Image 1: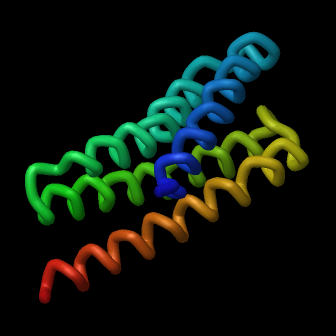
Image 2: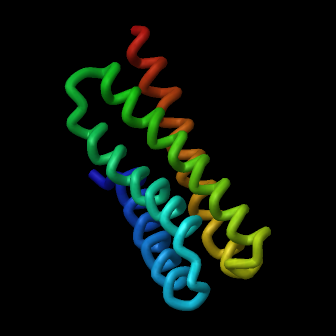
Image 3: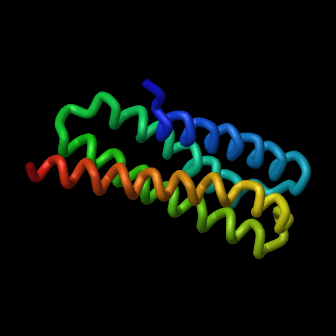
Length: 118
């Protein structure tokens, strides 16, 4: 069975790693790039942790934190764009993937919470 959430979060993490390398090498930006790297790679790590959660509550908690990290990543990307460190084109290339990840996480958390009540 394919794990869409796992694959998408890993794909976004790879793109964020490459973005951070660009920001450091080309823009000499070290603070915001570290923030977006941290939040953008944490999403996938939390999704992986959730897969082997100790309980349903732990699973929901890990996915909820991943959701917060995805939202934070979107914030850092907006800030990088609006401060001129990345071009609007770079932003527009990344943001649909982050938005899709947000939608997947929201849906997964809602479903897990609903199933946990039953």
